[in-house]
Image (cartoon, rainbow, N blue to C red; front, top):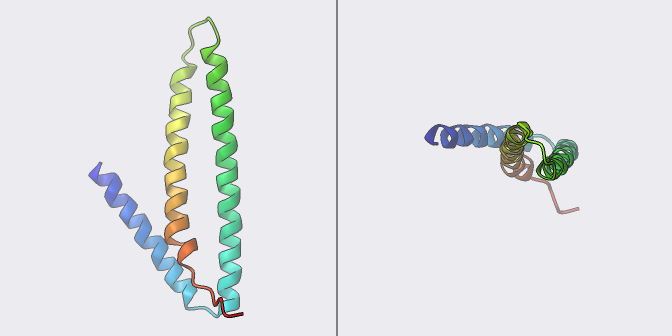
Length: 106
């Protein structure tokens, strides 16, 4: 568990560093990067949601089936992977996208 925490901290610091580089750009360029990253994050989260929903539909079908399946193990692996990916995306959102400063004075 300590390795995952350290890795998460490394990711956070890396994303914060990239946000710092972008924050050195003129405001109009920062806005373009923030929008592009925001659109990317939205699309990634949406796609991950589709995967999670499809996985739950498969889980219901397998659980409703009278035959024994090994699919339950695969469904659990997909769920675990989706949760990890969601955590990585949240780290990127919180430590990169949300750290890009915009001049709100317009």
